[in-house]
Amino acid sequence: MINTLKAAATAGTLALALATAAPAPVLAQDVKTLATVVTSDNPQTQLMSMILTLQAVERGVTTQILLCGPAGDIALKQAPETATTGQPPKNMSPQGLLKAALAKGAKAEVCAVYLPGKGVSPEALIDGVGVAAPNDMARALLARDTRVWSF
View 1 (cartoon, rainbow, N blue to C red):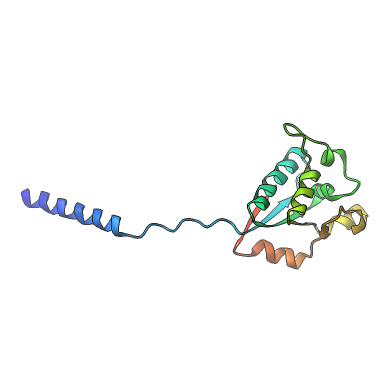
View 2 (view 1 turned 135 degrees about the vertical axis):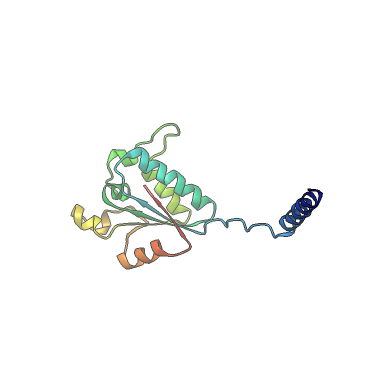
């Protein structure tokens, strides 16, 4: 019995020594590239997507925004009121925050099928918003170092 206790104590000491001598785990690195995909027609969801995306831009994350379906309306010069009207609690709008993200270096595009589906040309988009090339967007979304947020 005494030998068993001594062996257990020695094993415990060895385990403790190994645990404290092992290198610390590598901490996750901050995200370097973000792709925000917005398809929702819900104004609150659109606004929150822009709030979070702007936070990433302000932290220095290279950011690309893809607006598809009803969310593409955020990027129109003649956007619906839901895209331009300020919402509580800070009276911000989805389009206002999209413009803020663009001003801080984000890239924004509408899906390639959005404009033809609306029957309008790229001139209908606010300054700074382009039309996504499917091959380039697929490459960006599939990149190993890209975090994708979908709203």
